[in-house]
Length: 616
Image (cartoon, one colour):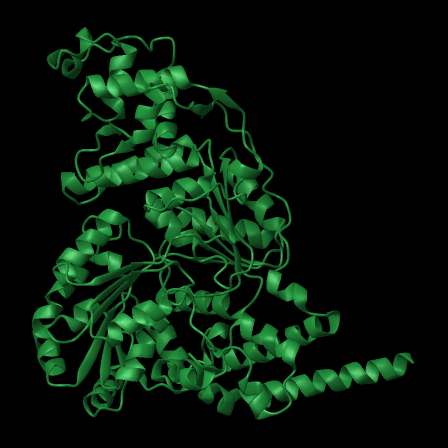
């Protein structure tokens, strides 16, 4: 397609004129094209890949009203503000707004003025709201964080399940379901419940190659956490803790040691939480110590590290949480402290949850998969992506690749485990398999006659904990798999059967050595292309952005992303036409911000010129 033709294409015109981008990111265009053809879409895209544009561009091309379902007020407000700065008529109706503001937002939507209307699922799925919307020109419905629909997923929210009725009220309106986190089982459940199977599914990959992955044995969590963060002083980061108390202890410790830090958890009053979140979003070099309450809607592009001081609840939760790092594409780090006490605590939480036995069982299995990741003897990224159904080569950007611990050949033990799984019918979990190997004489083993098996008691030379660790590592390395949809039974994979035939070996990490977590990270890759003078200009542009963000009470990235400022510092635009060529500058931002940023560029050039004249 010629450039002239591409300019005339409505979706590309919207992309350039409204959002200031010259081209789509990988995968975006396929999702957009399907929606423009009136198809339902389930899109699974990694964090930071531009999911929002996948429904925002079709919304503006289609005209009429697009209804966007979003789970959190903060998430809605950020997206609405960003759209308004881009010159798009967007509104939200939610509990944080006054009744008068909500009525006014509805009036604009009903009159046809609003293009995108954001609502929480519980507000949308009332009989009165659905009846009112059915009278409007609704052209598209977008559901963000769609994994919340599925009971198979760890983040199930009951209020989201009501969304499965949308197809009845709007039978001719395409629906876009978008998420960054959904394994194969969850995807299939979303497609069945929301679309009756009638949808195009796009899985654009889960890999975040710019984020390095490390796990460190937990000994003294405060000392380890402080050491890690001190080595990254001046960078923005998040420290996730399991409890409110730990969150406050972490923030206090960092502050005492001269690191800008704040706490965030659900037990704080709303005003303090909002003030702390706004500070994190607008200031650089601040570390937030938080519980998982600090979650969806945190779209700060320059988070350089995420530390887990405690074990998350599942692989999905871990992926979502560390995915808040490196959204700008520059190098970032995900670092976890892992200890046995974490496993016990997480198991206890699951048992105390007000949920059915089936859900508890699945949560135990998900936790087991995460423990397997932590104990991995092979590339962590391979294990992480394998969990979501993707194959990958060793990444060279995780501790298992860069600093592998001591490995020992445990092929004979692995074969015993596989033989025991098969001999017991491939339907029992790790506890029972270890019972058989250890020669346990409990009621279940005796009732099933498993004390008569040839391998009964064959593993007494090892401790129970060692067998359990071996099985976890075999799951992590895909020699055996967990039946998550069933009762968590261990099953032998093709790779495990090959091992029995004498093809390959199983390498077991017998001990986990402390890893150097204190190494300094490299500067953001994008910034290294700037000269010293341009880097100074970039700092000045960031100060302008910060002042504008504070004055408007929005996150700094809503004004301009770091990538836009870097491009601005390199180009040094002097005219509106030149400023329009900067990455991320659409027509609305050109009108509102060009003068202020070009003035900052001219001031910097004048100061640089004066300094050079003085030196000569």
